[in-house]
Image 1 (cartoon, rainbow, N blue to C red):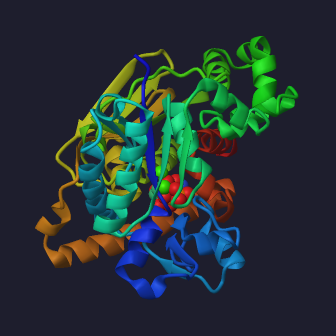
Image 2: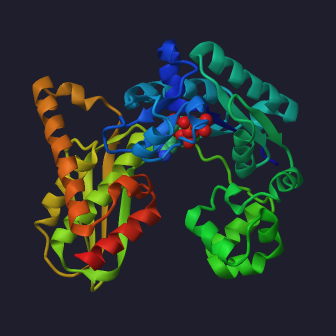
Image 3: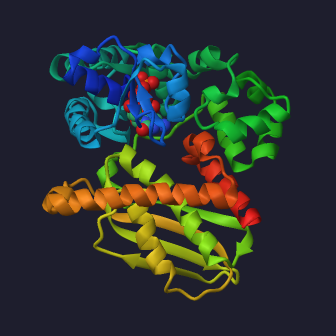
Length: 404
Ligand code: DCP
Ligand code: CA
Ligand code: CA
């Protein structure tokens, strides 16, 4: 049977929650992330701030340059996690399966509960209404025949939007003249490859499918399908707290035998893992270090229980394990967090210890960034934002390898 799928995504999520809880922030450019004098990135910002060109992932210094009159705040992940749980209560009431993609976003399979498109429209309306009435927040909803189309639809009329794409033909008509990046599986580096071959729009992909597949392999096959409106993926019931682990690994182009360098790479990996864990509101109670030697022998080492919710603490544990392994050339290194939890473990620790540990971690974070900058001449002020992307991580690590 054909599917009826809703994709719901909250508007300026962290910022909207903060404005709701402190209405004096309303109507102002609000930037959630770091404070201007710190080193960090923009997590998100209000739509007023977006008018100045500020956006998620941007270096905070750049945001400050564009919007010096903005209000800058740290995120409060625990609060957003609590709101996310309330959202799920609403969403799950209308879906036979719901798949959380982030704290503020989910796919809902409403095929059975809606019965037909009219039923689904009603569900979309109710979700928007209840989100407003019960949580005093707005969301954007997309209704469609597939996951890809539903996600595209929810983006279409943001904020507080509603849009529907009921057939593959409608989907194709909507996006065929747009840049290939409208297909959300096409990231920056994939887009560059396509542009280099003169493929700029979705229509170009449709008309040159063989070429795209030759260029991108398996991923190319998937992209050509989406470009033609084909996506039969089901909504997979999923909650972030069911995730088994969050990890990132890196294969070097050339084997690395310098273990001091590996410790620095561990910080890059830990920053990436920290960012992803925070976005779904989870902490790890265990850390795994994975290594593959040049002769392809792989080993893993784990530590648990530990409290790991920051790049510094994740790296600290990984370095301890790295110091105990056999020192031979390394081909791959990875870190993952497991025993994921959203419990407030920090509350169980003594306040004073907590504060002191916090300060120490802050110092260590600064020191690690400084080392990276001084040893490798990496411009972290400029690159920190992109560092959270896997491909930049890769490039940065390779750069470090060459210059150490
Ligand atoms: N987030 C983050 N870092 C990013 C992107 C997002 O920490 N690079 C966080 C902050 C956002 C939340 O995740 O509030 C949801 O991300 P979205 O991409 O859905 O962005 P918003 O909900 O903030 O805005 P929009 O209205 O565009 O969906
Ligand atoms: Ca959102
Ligand atoms: Ca989102």
